[in-house]
Image (cartoon, rainbow, N blue to C red):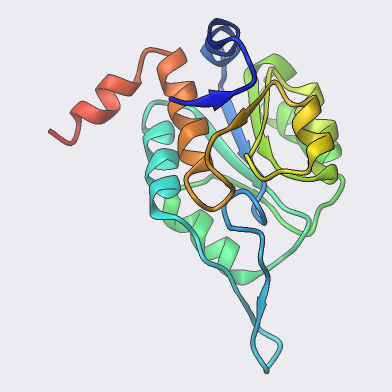
Length: 180
C-alpha cells in the first residue's frame, strides 16, 4: 500500500468501513488516452494489475461500481469480465448516480470509496468516506482528495486503491494467501 500526501492511519480509518468502491474509467482504469479507429469505433487499454485488485476487493465482500461520463461497449465488457455489479456509463452527473446507488444499496456516503482523476469526479471525491485521486489527476482534484495514489491512472492506481481498502479491513493477507 502506497499513497501520497496523507496520514496513513487516517486513510486506514477511512477505509475500514468501506462497503462500496467506485471507479471512474478514462484516466483511472485507463491511461486517459482515447483511441478511435477509422470506422469510429473506440478501444481502451486496461491494466491487469488493476483488474486483479478489483477482483480481490470483490472477493473480500466489497461491492464495486463504475461511473463514467463516456459510453463504450468495451467498458461494459471489462466490467462484466471483472464482476463489477454496478455500471453507469454516459453519466456526467456522478453525484446523482452516487445518490441512486446509495439508495439502492442502503449505504451512507461514509461507506463509499471513490477513485477519480478529473473535475467531473470531484463532487463525489469530496462527498464520500474515502475520496482518492490518481497520481496524474488534475492538480485541483488532487488538492481536494483525501489521498493520491503513487501510480498513474491505468498503471496500477486502482490496484493501490483496492489494496488500501483491503489493508484497512484486514483482508489483504487473506487475498494474497488465496494464491499461495
